[in-house]
Length: 135
Image (cartoon, rainbow, N blue to C red; front, side, top):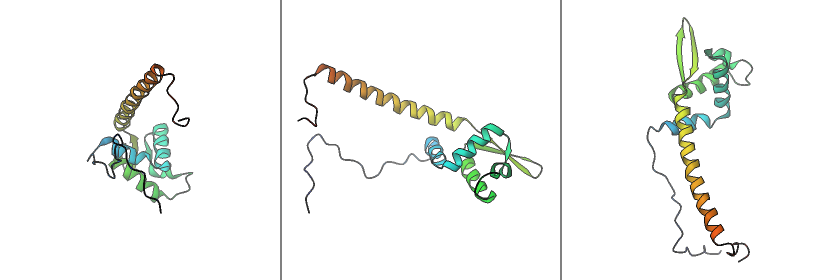
């Protein structure tokens, strides 16, 4: 068995866990969006709102009860609202969590753009620097 290569002084250890952002809108939104069925339901809600769980379940290879569970998660994450009309419950999208998640993604994108711009400037300033695979 080989031992791991020694770390250089500049290597940052990778954390084994990350601090939880309790109650983060982005966390709840990304958790909800992680499932393809829930993303499909959101698209259907946007297209047909207000819509019932029965209407959403039609044409899906899952039961109405499974759809209801997905809707409950979407509701608890703040992505959909429900209104009662007689015996029916009709679902609508709440856009704010998606807007906040998109803003978070734009901030991450801007940070990476900054890092990549800095790398590009560094490489332009050092054109004769050997490529790591060539060293």
